[in-house]
Length: 329
Image 1: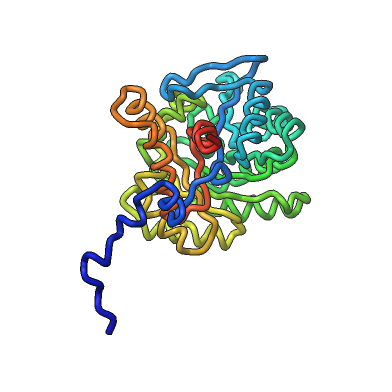
Image 2: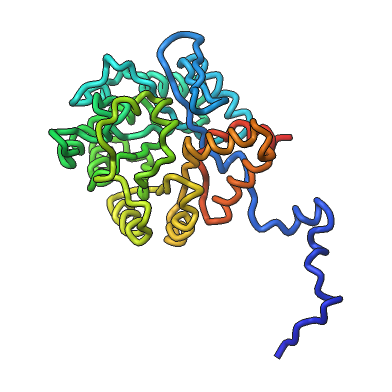
C-alpha cells in the first residue's frame, strides 16, 4: 500500500509559487468564448439610456447596438442576447407585438447579422416584454394559460427565426414549449436554429433590475410562481431538463446563476451543454459592491469562474464586455 510522503516532501505550495506555475496547473480557464453578452435595445437613433437599477448598463438604439456587437466580436465574445424595451402602447393582452416581423428585436437582429455576421444572436421566446400584464404567457382572469400561450410562442419563434436569430431561448416555462418550437422550426425550414432552453428557471427575487430594463416590472400583476420553479427544488430541475432535451433542446440553462450553482453542477452532469445566466440582481449586487469599494473588481471573473468550475459550458453575463477586455490585457 502506498504510504503518504512525510510532510517536508509534500508541499502543495510549490505549485502556487509563481504566476506561470499557477497558470500551468490551472484546472479551469475562463475565456471570452465562454461568454454571451445580454444587451437591451430601444427605439431611436444614436440613443443610449442608462438602466438605473443596473449601473453601467444602457439600453441602446439599433445603430449603437450594432457598434456594440462589433466591439464584442473584436474581443472574441461569440454571441449577444438581445432584449427589447417595448413601448407600453404596443403591449396588449394578446401580445401580438411578439411576432410582429418589424418589432424591435427582429429589426435589431437583422441589423446585427448584416453588419457582424460572425456574432451569434440569441433572442428570448417569451411574452412578458409584450404583455400588458407583464406575464410570460396569455392571461385569462387569474390564470396564465399554457396551451394558448404555446400558440403565441410558435408565432414568436418563427418571426425571430425568419429575422435571422441563431439561438432561441424559451424563457416562459410553459409545458411543452420546446417541442412546439422545434416542430415549427423544422416545418418552416429553420432546422439550423438552435434552442437554448431556460430549462431550470426559478421564481427568483433576483430578476427585479431586468424587469426595469425591459419595462415589464411595473405592469406585472401577481407573481410567476405558477410557472417558474420553486427555489426549494432541485430534483424538479432535472426533470425539467430531461423533458426539454427529449423535446429537442440543443442546450439548457439554469437561471439565476450564483445562488443555484448546485443546480448548475447537477444539470451539467447530464452531459448536455449547460449555461448559467448571471442575472440582473447578481450584476447589481456585484456592481454596487465594487463601485462602493467593498469588493475588488476581481470578484467578477472569480464569480464567472465558479460557473465554469461547476461544469457550465458558458455564462450569460452583463459583465461580459469588461471581462473580455480584461482577459485581452
